[in-house]
Length: 201
Length: 376
Image (cartoon, rainbow over all chains, first blue to last red; front, side, top):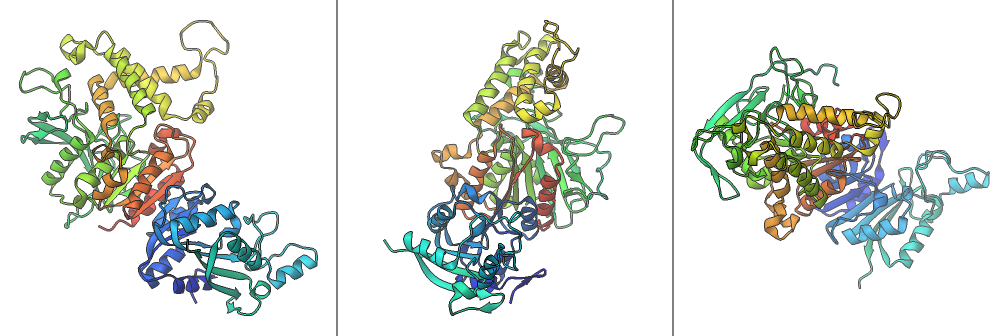
């Protein structure tokens, strides 16, 4: 398992397993650049991160990560079609308003896209709602009034959107904490990861 | 982090004379010339820690430190350069050069034309960003510096940093381009033209040969600077600083200073006209206008930047409308399409174009982080 600071990011190992050797990657919402560092050291991948927060941008510079300060809500205009092997968005999709738009852009700019997000269908979240409160957990650490998340969706919702928009799920992984979930992940997984492609024309 | 940082202290400019003619883009050439420069820090044994800082329109070789016995002689980018500062002179050997055509010691329109024994004046040839870079490279040869760790500049200085990475790709490891653009916008050229017309139509301009008449076109230069100052600030910054504040607290119905902004602009204009050379102003604005590396590539910036081998750091400021973030992003994407390593910081600031000279904490932290990772 990969550990950064006191945060365990098992999703990074899954992503590294999906990314091919020497790939050209774009990481949307790259934070301090840990995933890019991980992909550089494990897969010799190289690329760029996009990050909005100035403190993260400075940390990326300290980590010698190529970082472009930009707001993802502005989309990926400026990037060319197929400019990257993978466009990755780790645990940020739920914080972007224009979900549909950014997914389409990821698959325009990237040959493939990799996304991970907290699964709002996770059974503990369902219990919480049943008890009358919005869920707060390791994967959803914020209160409803201060969460940066703006889109609340389940794995089933996401797969439905992919289906409707001609996005092909190439691979899927789901976890409860660090435990891989194979059976009924929409119920038992707190975090989901997808490797996505475009439907062949 | 900045508690132990301080100024480089008292500095002394040096002068290098060159006898080999410098061919210029215009087709003309300079037969011989002087370059005035300053250095801070120590060149290491490997000669691998040199950073060239290029100046903008009104700047000079005096980047950092002060002159002995001269009050208010602090260098124009002193807040960035010094021991413990983001461009740390404990690590780097920093060089500032006054560009050719300048008025601070390097050969310019005020210098004596060897052919006539009189000031060059209107006969001084047009110099471009690329010409400056060629002259810089000759000084680097003279100093025994084969490769620069970084070339850094803001505004017009950033254009020189970019030109360095294209003309001498193997001689620059990092290009650091702040508040600049791959070329001026139409609006920018328009502002420059108004500034030039102010000078050119000043009755004391005498076609650029005013030195012989013992006069200076101060009115034109003053107007040019006043106009420039408006464009270097943001609307918000001006409103915050001056608002509609009245000098006398009431409307007096005359053309003397009433609003504080008028006082500020007049002061800045007068100050500038008192020391800057009008011909230098004209030549420098033309160098700005001409700069366009994509020009030779039918406007294809990506093709123009294919020659670069450096890694890049680009920064812009949110309220800079003279060199807006969008212009820096053009540069970023053209470099990215070429597969260059590039990082880009878009700094929130209310100070407009002038932001690049200020010590905004986020801006300086980003610069510090980038410089710390430059290997020497």
